[in-house]
Image 1 (cartoon, rainbow, N blue to C red):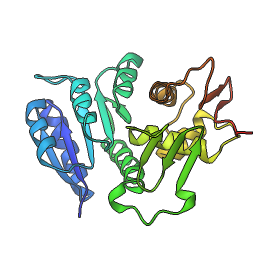
Image 2 (cartoon, one colour):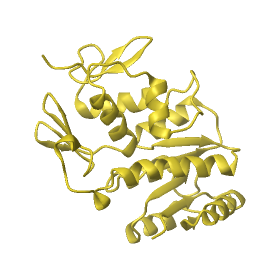
Image 3 (cartoon, helix red, strand yellow):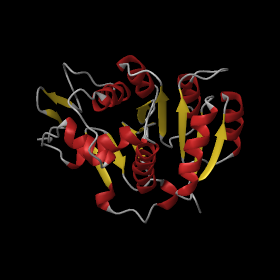
Length: 236
């Protein structure tokens, strides 16, 4: 069954163009020019990914992303007309998984959609195989089930976005070793558009720490190795 993708952008030319490129990749596309119409689709359809413009006439993309994250964990890609860090950080903090700045190349957006869907489907509970011991990663009261995409902290469920889940999984799998932001980026997105000025991983780490109740000064889970990367210490 084709993956279902939501597009919300009031610039009809851009929305129509993205729709054509995604349909050429055999995705099922739900295209809307307002957040109100998109919300009805979100309630009605089981979507696999959403592409949201920040500037919408009836509700901004941030609020729409927040509404999605109340009940859904599928990837969200934000579209912004501004190349400003604050816009990107705001979207990522609210639960978006990626962002792309207008104007953009349609093929680049398609590549990012594919990368997000690969990661999401890999850990989607609906396609999970029988659980094995290696599917559960643990550390100091934290349990991560990579098959069912479930995370528990001291027996309390944590709701993580696909990107947050992937970061935590990689750090747990490399427990005791430092993983650089660049390594995390390449493992998660599986492409080469990382640059030293890209703070995507930093923002996701910050949001992940908030959910874990962690701090930079006294980390129980994610430790920053300044100038190198991040690590989760091995327990004695």
